[in-house]
Image (cartoon, rainbow, N blue to C red; front, side, top):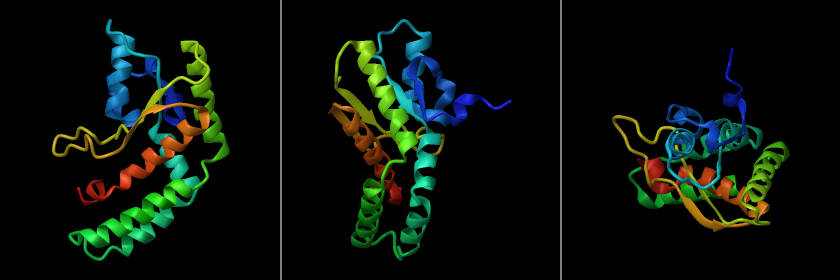
Length: 175
């Protein structure tokens, strides 16, 4: 039977273990391990999942658009061309409308977090957590963006999209 968590868009840190790197990436799975298995104080939090990212990319048509844009990239060593293509890709992702059901789930989790911490619009960090971050032959750490002091449901959703877009920074695509 498939784990229902594999199709979830959002998972709370206390639902995660280090072994969940494929679902939520290295940072989030480590925070989950600390939250659930070790007596270390970790702020409440949740992760959007790799499933949510794949759903966003498919539902908004970004997969096809990005594939087409990457095919136009003639020379990855040409930093100007690489920058132009990557900028177009990031702009495309950021301008896409977050699917309503995904936006609702991310927004609802933010509201639940606000309730848990007793604040109307808590400040949060929205950060990438690549599922391939810690491969034995490659390190993606620091390749994608982090946003600090994000507040409000709509801004959190926007910053999640910007994290998705940061998968396509010049250095990450080149890498």
